[in-house]
Image (cartoon, rainbow, N blue to C red; front, top):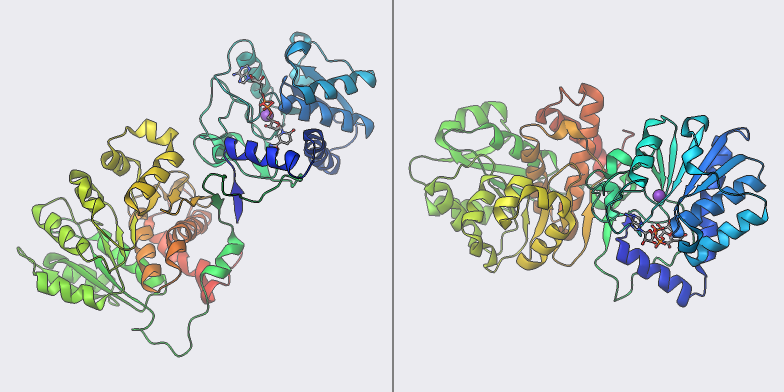
Length: 504
Ligand SMILES: NC(=O)C1=CN([C@@H]2O[C@H](COP(=O)(O)OP(=O)(O)OC[C@H]3O[C@@H](n4cnc5c(N)ncnc54)[C@H](O)[C@@H]3O)[C@@H](O)[C@H]2O)[C@H](O)CC1
Ligand SMILES: [K+]
């Protein structure tokens, strides 16, 4: 599991490290620069022509420290200081004076041809970027990107908002990013994934202990974490003891969503799945998915029948393909009136809820909501572009206000829990933006809930496993041609033998 620190958390950890543990900022800066120079020394020959671009803040200090270390180690290295000496931060000034003491003065940036270097280091801005980058630095960044040279970004590509992943005016497109010790939300959100390249997380001696004052913890799961989530199947168990899932899905017009979500629930390891759907779907579901139990309703539905199914179930999924009819609304209200049953609320059920948001305030047990950005916009009344730029904040606020697990689906899915913990998902790919992909995720969530796997962990792990299966599907079929059924098909390879993970 990797930790993700917002800018204010990173600053707080810095202060703690220097004040509590008496490690000066210059020591951290030296270690940050050493981690990059060790990497360059491993990967590049001494004759490599390297240019370090240094801003006037501590990110520039990192780049100038790197320049000194590479010089001492015999590299052909130069630097450009991008701003007046008078604006240098305290530590950056020390680095600059140290370079001068070695006889290394800054190149004049206007006379520097970026193409004449083999490698460019970006130390223009780090987490101190506070406003849009403007002329002339914006043009300079454009030239660096156009040079076609590999770029190593120190801490974060200059111009990327470390908290949101928004591009602020202009942004370095890095081939590699050395994010010092922790990930930042912006590396995974917004434009982050497209401008950071390969991300390294060198440990540099920052105190990583979350204190009471530290804001909610944000995490990114890794493949190794799955071993602790999926435990071995009880050898003495039976289909009843491995969890029973009730899937309320499909309608007179829609059937496929019920098939995909209920198959995912069973593939998650649950012992039994019962689909509650419109009678028109019985034959199709029975043929496509003979393992499912099927209960149907016609023009009217029976409270007794659904109540009996709810009493039978260990978890319920409601929403995929149910439509927005009065009948669907009545069923939703009825299902959600039982606080004891853990519920996954997806698709049209979310749209129905957004028409009566007070129903979210009703007392309830475990609820996992799985909106994509459009559904989240309807639920919150906020615009999609605002939500995309404030995904973390929006998900955290919603989870806390309504005491639900909120899975906000996007290129990087955010999972926020009412306790304040948040996960940013690092698995998955653009091929998963395909019809039915969300139905598979919702089914997985319900399947894990039914198995009484630690409910706190279900939402984030389901998202991660779903993304990994999507990565396998993309490797096999290609991002353009993969469909939701391919994600389903790949699931067993991720979860095989109760958590023993195969190489992807
Ligand atoms: N996190 C750590 O423990 C460590 C961090 N290090 C490095 O320090 C930077 C953060 O340094 P800081 O001085 O706070 O900020 P920056 O270098 O990013 O730049 C701030 C500087 O720039 C001005 N500024 C902000 N936005 C703009 C703009 N759009 N245009 C022009 N000028 C702008 C601002 O006013 C400041 O003067 C962190 O990222 C790490 O790289 C340590 O060295 C290691 C430990
Ligand atoms: K940078």
